[in-house]
Image (cartoon, rainbow, N blue to C red; front, side, top):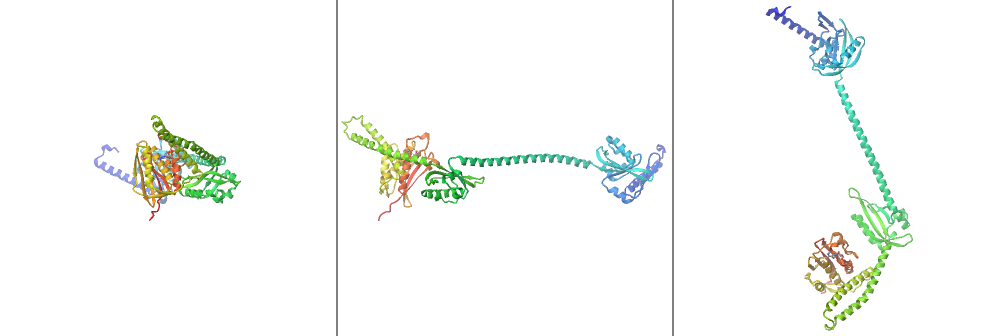
Length: 557
Ligand code: ADP
């Protein structure tokens, strides 16, 4: 029919006919797809051909339509006779367009050859293979293509079932990546594990070594050593302890102090130890331990607490160092000091006598130029006498023989005498007395004057820049407190604790002064003999207040 020569009416009816044909075709496709009919008319160029599906019952169609795979039927020429909605969706083309096209349209060009081979084979036997398809907008899709031959009325056809592998491939890929990540994580964990294991091994080794170190050390030092649990119970003694006491571990742990300690040392030792257990302070005491042969030897005992990370005491490490020889040498030294100072005292006394004799001569008998020398000799002699007296006192204290008589002492009188003496010798210093009381104590005036003069002389000695010194008396709780305050170099906390020890002096090169560190030791002993209290308050660099307190004498009616 020549279309360009048709009239408008003819064209209108042709259009109507074509439209009807199209509607019929669409209906037919829809009908087949939904299982209402089971035949299809295809125009294959040489006229219309009718295809009927032999097995076409409705259940089967619905099933095919609903399944998740693409389902297509092609004829010998490869034309698509049937497609389910899923396949159309897979290749992103409207369903009506898919039917009637050759299936090759949807095969990726790179897979043409494979597809031909597969289809050829499929006519002989059922087969399946992975193949790459292409969508209408050119995207590749991986599919598994299963081919089965079908017997239709008009001849054989091929049923193609297409399973989209894209998701599978993607999942596989993801799985591969996850597997790699897992392997890497596994390797990391393994490495960490190995490191951890190494660290544990190292720590175990360190622990072993440190225990061995401790044992080696404990077994080879000359001291006896032990460890105590926080409650004080001994849980280890070094072999030296057994060697010294002649007791086994079991024999010794159940013992009380008196079994191994000198009876005179039990009270101080146990008091100090109990105090350390309570406060966590380092335990230190000198005492005598009984040797296996019954001989007591002096030891320096120390126990130091070991804390854990929570600052709790885990155990105590104790040592006892034999100081018997040092003690004996110290005693010999004290003996020597005693004898020497005694021996020195005799010629000193005669010297003093002769000097007094010379001083009593009239001025005309000795020339005026000689007089200052006599004064200087007198001063030097006084200093020497004080030193020798101090030495004698120290050896007397050591021997427990510092004895003196007690009587009523007027405190104000005592202060007055001392301040007068000090002012006479140190005219450049300003001594301020704060004493508003008239009090009496029971004591030895000479010895108490010695203490006060030691305080005052130290104040002068250790305050080279500030010249003010305050001497004060105060009363509280039936006690009098006499203090000497200076504004000199002062003392640190550590120094304060030690200054009352025998021969202790602060090692400060800046303020080197002469002295032997005996004055405060003797003072402390004198005050102790008076049942009093001695002490110091001081801030380094700001000065110091030395004081003593003594019980007041009851006022007689
Ligand atoms: P000495 O004065 O002979 O050294 P002491 O026993 O009197 O001995 O004093 C012991 C130590 O105490 C002194 O060496 C000194 O370091 C310190 N000291 C004593 N008095 C004072 C003070 N007023 N200010 C600062 N330090 C002092």
